[in-house]
Each structure stands twice: as structure tokens, then as C-alpha cells.
Image (cartoon, rainbow, N blue to C red; front, side, top):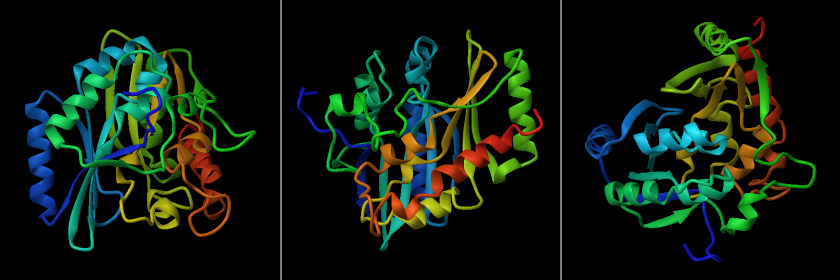
Length: 275
């Protein structure tokens, strides 16, 4: 990648007429045949479907550095828009710098490109690698490593038990999409669907995902359990990172979703209420 290249959060694979069910099946077959593991899938709203995949290379990186934990689940979104199906996926080149990953994500980018194709990147006007590495939406807001810490437990097993208990009770209106455990390390990742309130998947889509190419691959939310600690990317970092062209005011703006980060935080904190 050229040093001055502008990076965008998503890659458009295709945007053509097609059958949703058939396309999802074909994508899963192609990805698993190429060595990816399907972690989970779900539909955040009607006419949208998300596949979450990973592979051995991403798991190896995730054992070595915290930033790679958030790139371990690669997401593919399938969205029906005006009779066509948009297939798009998260851009590993964007994640490389946004999550300050020292390991190389280019092999993942190349593999996804071979499997899915690449028409264009989208989701913003573009950010430089340097801007992404120090990204924050505005002064005083969180950066990558300002994690939202949800709880600390005496052991990894106790932390997992608390998370699973909260998910079973659907605390905060949260539903599990996937769980993956990193062998050889006390690390587990959960994919979470937020189904209720202003911080829910549906509310975010309605508020800001209004441009022609949809940001469906941003879902679900990743929660990390590592050595007894439970944390996520802070919503005030992650939300604008997924929509970096948000204006300060107006229809497509941070103001339009000003209460969303707090609602997400409240839902996530409620997951562990009661321990």
C-alpha cells in the first residue's frame, strides 16, 4: 500500500441482482473452501445478513497483540437495496492502522479479494494510515486503546461464566452471534447483536446508514474476554470509526445519534450486572 493511500472501512465485492438465500449459501461455501471458519451469522434487520469468519492466521495474530483481537472476526455483509444485492466486507487494510496492528493483515486482504472480489472501497472519503493510527472523532473523545472495561474477574473461567449468564438472560437486549476461544491463550471473543433501544442495530441503521452503499459489515459488536478482563472498543470510538464522514450536525451527523454511544454502553454494562 502506498504511504499516502487513503483507506476506507469497507470493500464492495458486488452489487447485482440475486437471490439472498442462494448468495449467502454460495458465500459460505466459497469462504470455508478457502480455509475460513464460519463463526456465526445473523440478520440485524430484514434484507440484511452478516457472515462472520476467521482463519488460523488471524487467530495467531490475536494471540500476539490486543489490536488483532478486533480484526479476528472478519465480516461479510449482504444487503438488499432496490432489487440488488450488495456484498461487502470489512477492509483489513483499514483495520491494520485503526487497531494499531503490527502484524501484517495484507495476506487476509489478498485472500478475501481472491474469494470475494473487489470493486471499490467505501464508507468514507478516506483516511491516511497516520490519521487512522491516532483516530478520534473529536477532541476529548476516545481513541483505539481507550477501551470500555465492563468487568474484571478472578479467572478467565469466571469471566466467561458471567458473560454467558448475561447472554442467556438476554440482559440489555443483547443476543449472541458467535463465540470463539483462542487455543493456547486465555482469550475468548463474543459477537453481540444489540436488539433494543437507541443503541440497537436497527436504530443505528435507521439513524445513519442512509447512503447508497450500506455499512452492514460493521455488525455485530465484538466483546473480548482476556485473562479475566471483559472489554470492548469504546462506542464513542467504534461508531465514528465505522462512519468516519459523520458531520457534526444535520441528517447524516453525530448529532443525529448523540445518545447512541451511551445507550450501547448501558446495554453492554447491563450484560454483567449482578456479576
